Image (cartoon, rainbow, N blue to C red; front, side, top):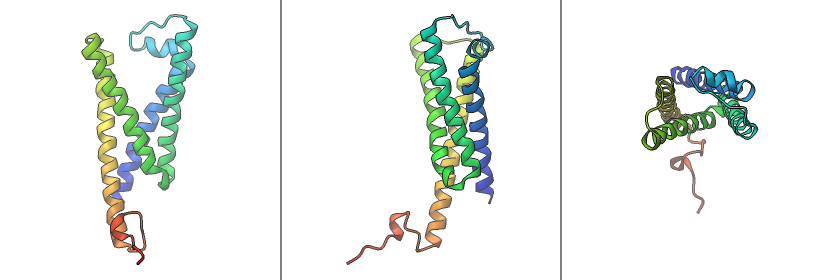
Length: 152
């Protein structure tokens, strides 16, 4: 029960952030980026590229939110969330190494992304351990090799 609440809370947090950020990048990229001190030019190609990534973020966020209401989606939603936040956070680390340190807002965003990624990974591990424990208690559940019957 507690594991379920923890996983749902993490998916809700992950989903709300990604859906909000993705929606803002998709629909109001100038205003959204200005809030972090970034000036977005009126380059149609750049806006097209930004809005596309905003749509992906929004879709990932919605998937995470669906994982809070459909138990079967919780595991894949955690995998998507962990991958999303880890890839964004680590990509920003690569950018710091290559390009230098960005403004304070961008550093905070990087820390938030890496923090959410770690929490998603903890929740993922917790959910997997819980599923393994439940599977071992139910010998008819064949999701794990130790419960599979090999025919002779």
